[in-house]
Image (cartoon, rainbow, N blue to C red; front, side, top):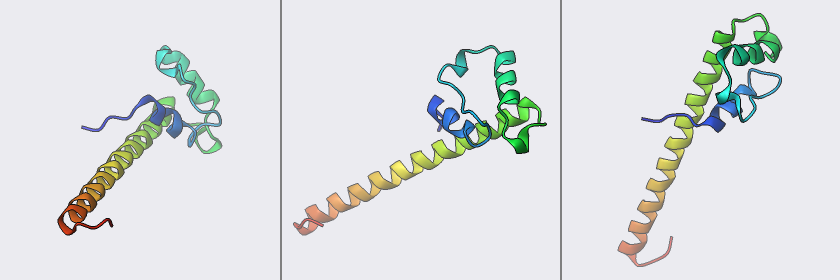
Length: 93
C-alpha cells in the first residue's frame, strides 16, 4: 500500500493554505492544527471547517504519492526493458 510521506502533506497544504504546513505540524495538538488551517485557509476555503480543509490536503497528498510511486515503477520497468534489449541484441540503446 502506498502511504503519503510528511513532505507530501506539506506540499499539498500549499494548494489550500496561504502558508504551507511547517515541518513540525505533525507534533501539534489537533486544536493547534485546526487553528492553523483556519487562520491560513486560502480565500476559497476561508469559511470551511478545518476538517474539510484537512481532507483536501490529505486527498492531494495521497494522489501525489501514488503518482510518484507509479512513475517510479514505470521508469524502473523501462530501464529493465532497455537492459534486457541491450543484452539480447548486444547493442546499447
